[in-house]
Image 1 (cartoon, rainbow, N blue to C red):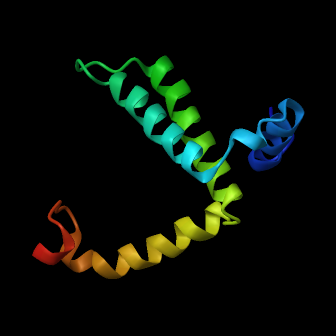
Image 2: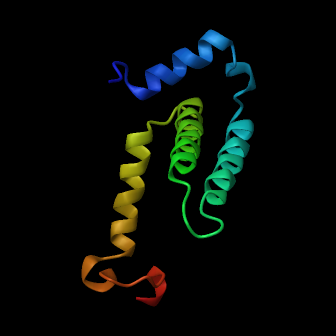
Amino acid sequence: MHEKPVLEALREFVAEREWAQFHTPENLAKSISIEAAELLECFQWGDADLASAKDELADVLTYCLLLADRLGLNADTIVMDKLAKTQEKYPVDKARGRSEKYDRL
């Protein structure tokens, strides 16, 4: 369906519109928060508006990828690094089926 990798397509989209000048880390972080609130709104009254949630989730992911790129970070790498830290905090034998914070396991 889509031929280009996501980050490449986003970079091209931004470049064509000359929007990089507006994509400061602060502005991108603000946009993540705004779009996350819009995503939450899709679930506000119980039944999810899946079509809207899909679009808002895409917006959140887009701004997250753009922020990581702007900071010179690889999204896959930082997620995997954080996952490794979280795996240490939440060992399977203690955390399986539980929602307590790591310091309460």
